[in-house]
Image 1 (cartoon, rainbow, N blue to C red):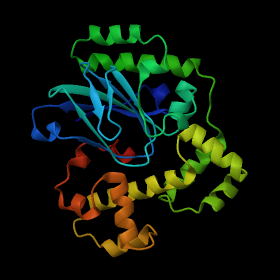
Image 2: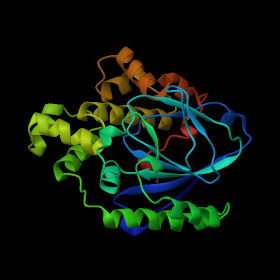
Image 3: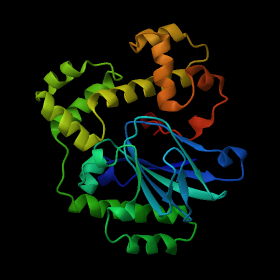
Amino acid sequence: MKIYPPHPLLQHLVSCYRIIYFGNDPVFRQPWVVSPTGSNTLAILVSPASVIDIGRKEQHSARIRFSGQTDEVKYFTSEAIVNSEILVELKAGAAFELFGIPQNYFTNKWMEVDNFLPDTATFYDQLDDCGLDIDSMIPIVDNWLLEMAVRSKNKPKTEILLAMQHIITSSGQMDIVQLRNKVGMTRASFQNHFKQQIGVSPKTYSRIVRANAAYKEIQQIKDVDWQQITHNLRYFDQSHFIKDFKHFFGCTPSDLHRGGFYLSQFLYKPDDY
């Protein structure tokens, strides 16, 4: 896996470009696990191929696919064995600013970009001119996103961005009423604007952030004290922790810690870059 930084003018919108090479390793022949991270991705295939959402039984054949916010683990497979993919890791709220479409429209969906963005043909032609040279593709992706950012008239509400920051810094543990009071919004306005700009409710976003905090801690500790993690992240009990973790990641915390689960090869964490 290789990581590229975005153009400086895109750094408030894009965390990084992450390159995944799908080779002949057996791990790539089993379903891919895509788990909620609290952010969105644009997946740009270097060579066009169909991708199948196993749970929804939907096939996506477009060159570029957009992942809305997900609130549960998803599984995908592809007809192609060897391929490469540029994952544009968008920061939370960035998709609303770039596309100008309420993000709750995309919740739990992978959408073909052609369905909601006009004039992608020129962008595809520019990518094709690069052949398989990903280094040449990155500036083209930069320019495509910069053009959208310049045209955009949609800016996330400052209160929503502040609320997200509180959720992240508290590892998803801040009470929603306290959070709403901190940003000075009514209950209805807060819920509606949050779903519109982020794609899920504040409570769901908090659960995702908390589960990802647990994921990160498990990856970093050799001898895990499960009771301590449960306490630190304020889960009601270990049973609740395990159930929530499996809902988002498709495996138990102990499965992940044993290292027998391949999710970590695909899952992006903001701290990785």
